[in-house]
Image 1 (tube, helix red, strand yellow):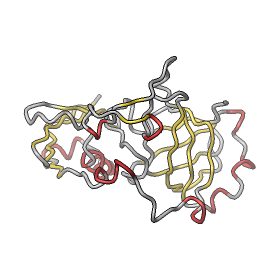
Image 2: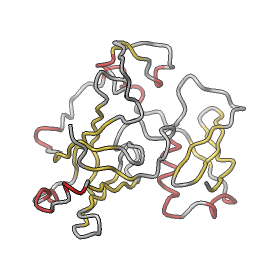
Image 3: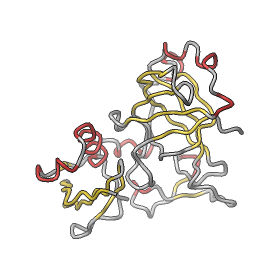
Image 4: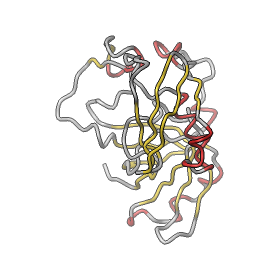
Length: 223
């Protein structure tokens, strides 16, 4: 497997990254190809598609051993299910699959063509193995059943971002940050209203507390 590109996002750590692609479509990412693959011809026709598949490496979850059972955080961290029934990063082969919106292609840059995407659930610097177009007639299944994840998709928090902290956050990042927090970055088994959590986002340390269904940002620290 050859790394053809790397993605650049606002997440330098794993904590806080949306659990699935497309949950926060306002998140921006840029895919920069490795020198050997900076060939415009390889992208001919891709700009006719609205979405693409990214096949990538769980570079922070590479292990020699694997387990047939894993504990999905959204099931409370205690219930075990089969690894092939989850999208856990801890797999026999550390390969991820994400569907993202192709916002635009920047054809001419000092680093070759760059893909600008929305809704990626990848950490900054993640290696990309392949890119394929998303095709509606083959890839979309409106009547699909989502197993044990069915009730999870509706879980969202009310985010309180005090006006006094807004000047510390670039205006273009207000919406992406609120959507990331609304998706509740915490593992389901953590529910302490007195606990202060923190995520690193776009060079900022965002500290917050959660009480019931309300998440309140209490501090923004510039890294």
